[in-house]
Image (cartoon, rainbow, N blue to C red; front, side, top):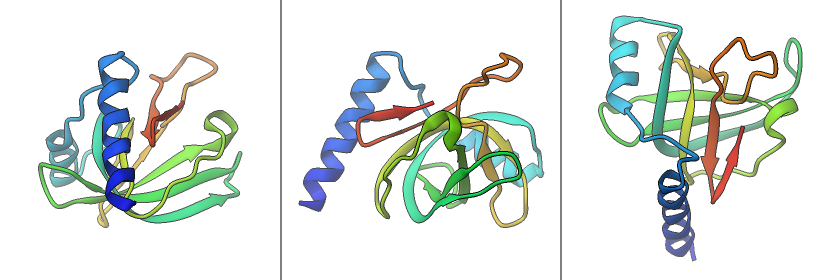
Length: 137
C-alpha cells in the first residue's frame, strides 16, 4: 500500500509538472544557499517529508510546517512553512514526496523555505507545495 501511494504521488507530481503547475526542482541551488549562508533566495526543491509539525499559530496567521530531506544535491533537511490562510490545511505524512517553491532563509540547522503560497498583494513571487496530486498555493 505504501509503495502504491508513493508511486501515485510521484506520478501526480510528474503530471502536475507536465501541466505547468509546478516547476522543476533545483536542489543544488538550495544546497549552495545553505553552504554560503545566503537568505532571500527563491528556490524550487524536491524531497521527502521526514517530520510533520501540523498547524500552529504564527505571529500574524496560522502556519503548517514540516521537515523535508532534499532528493538530490546534498543530504540537507530543510524546514518548510506554509501560511494556511492561503494554502488551507494539507495532509502530509512521513515519507511523502513533495515539491516546494518558496524563499529560502538560512539558519545553521538547514534553513527554512517559506512564502510557499501566493502573495495577495502581488509584492512577492508566489510559491506552492505540491504533494499527493494536489498543489497548495
